[in-house]
Length: 419
Ligand SMILES: Nc1ncnc2c1ncn2[C@@H]1O[C@H](COP(=O)(O)OP(=O)(O)OP(=O)(O)O)[C@@H](O)[C@H]1O
Ligand SMILES: [Mg+2]
Image (cartoon, rainbow, N blue to C red; front, side, top):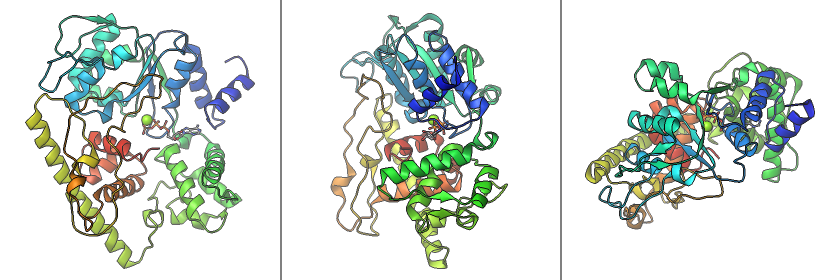
């Protein structure tokens, strides 16, 4: 990056805010390595802003007019991930009625962003290593190698060296992926950036929801925002700012208002879910929260069992889990169902769309009557609350919900919670 103004225009173009030197260095490295074909590994805690880096790399590379595909490796079921990535031949398994190109074929000439790469199953890691080393891959059900010219950018919030020690990640793949290593610093290490980001998100929210006046921090509240640890990083800050923008009657945010959301000086304490959820701290509301939590937990468990059963029944068959399609009727209230449509959990921001594998799974909504609780809404709300309670750390939220991280990723994408 040749000058300060180049950096500023890059940041403006991608909506990135911050004065932190380490962040700016990370952005400069992305631009610097973009014209090469070197693999890049982006590391950083959850919510620090890793996802913009691969886009910057692609847009500044000679591949910019070609396909860019972003895949969340954590959101694809283990049973189908190989065929999603590498494609399959007709008849490779029972439901493979046609051939499938796969992302490595579809991204030929372009860039493939493997987000949450630490979630890849070991067998898929072996396939990935092969394509990185030889530029060749095998479709599932084929022994004929295919060539592809794909630039790989990967990201992870997992401590990969630790995952290697635990036998969950291949060491050789790690070194192959991180030819270039870009580390994004946590928000607590970017002195002063939290307040700048608060202002940006307050303005964005006001604009998006036609709020006449954006919220602003009092000088005392600025000090709190600066000293708070932000364990969920920028995602947490963005969500809190959005919630305050909508819920706070006063446009002036004081330390007292922040404290109600668990944002207190020098702390990384609870984020005050009662206020966020639109309830208060009275006993009744609390009980209601508890009931919802217990009920939703039971539904999660039920769903996991249903999913396992389906996977067992279908063996190697490829299918996508769709929360809407596995909705179970529970008679509690009369809300209408607004569950998301199928196949929304991994998007392809590029110019090419790869059809996910499909299998016709009966939609339980069809058997839901008017007295049925909208489990989709309830589940979405419960996920949101668990994420807030755990500072947007998906791992901890998944543990609290009693589901795997992989399942949580899928549900977050399916319900559009991360948007
Ligand atoms: N410097 C920044 N300026 C403005 N917005 C930012 C910045 N960094 C991150 N964001 C926003 O914060 C949110 C979280 O960022 P992102 O999704 O990239 O996190 P992540 O590092 O991929 O986290 P995870 O590991 O949990 O997936 C996004 O909405 C992103 O646009
Ligand atoms: Mg991410």
